[in-house]
Image 1: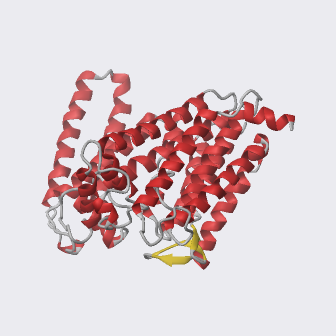
Image 2 (image 1 turned 90 degrees about the vertical axis):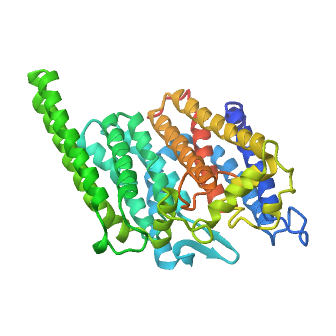
Image 3 (image 1 turned 90 degrees about the horizontal axis):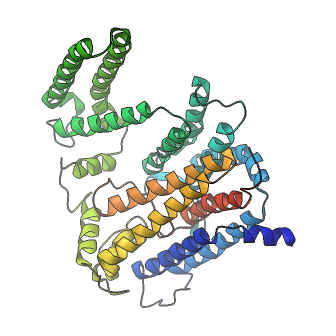
Length: 441
């Protein structure tokens, strides 16, 4: 009992308070988004809000159990947790329930479990375990490849479901690697790839649905010519401005970047046409302004924007959102839960929710940076990056600044898998933080 008192005395209660506040606010917003006058009780287990209450209670039990575990035990079983989450991803491909074209769920009656939500916990722990080990030197190519493989293997399994949205969240782990010494040039290359992707798609002179073999590629030619011209100009600039002993290295970097960019542009359309699902392609085209489909693929975003805009500065009031009440926004209790916040609580409520998430993420980073243990610091950054990507993409979807890819808003979107996943992520960190004065690896 003495040990238990010490654990709870050193617990970061500020973060715990944020967790419960966000979770309760999410529950009340789910109630508003799926409210039924025939079933007005918020505890009615036949409705989404009643089921969410069950998930909340079980999440609290999970959080309590984690706090009773030993921090070093969690570190030592990290590879086992990673292996189990990968095994679940394999099993769901074999025995999972197919919903909306995705084989991503284990079905248990009216409840479902999505293993991909727990894979984020497994990856975060495994990255921390590997990078904190004595033999891992992140400056070496071997360690970089191993870190990439830890992220890529479950990402590949999730792509087979297919669930592109969750895979996109995994890109957040690159920021963890950057904190541990990954070259900033990698991030710059990623930014360059994003810019080239947008320019390539915007400049192509084609309509959605035209086969690749019939594409008019003058837009791509223009982009390629522009890259060649910039490369030639930079080539002469290096010759005039850079010291002779550094020229060879700069020439190689310039030529490599230019050739890689040309190859990337040349293969982008092939990947766009053959890898992405049709509904994903049309959503990207709508986001970039290349197509309009207000009654089809663009309907969800249009309705969400309308609901959020109708809330004005102070909102219509709790349970008073007309678009929410009459179910005008599809998936308004899951992917588009933020439109309920915007309509009922307006700009003020939306600002408060975003601020609370920002405070939570900054607090997580603060917790990570105060650690003596390298393992806990790395894991803390993994948790912060996962939360950041979910909040960024989900709210971006709701206001039309990101493609619709089915990313839940932490603690707000209906669903037990995401709530359990975020609870595990956060409370494993809080447990490790309670032992911050103990020197761990």
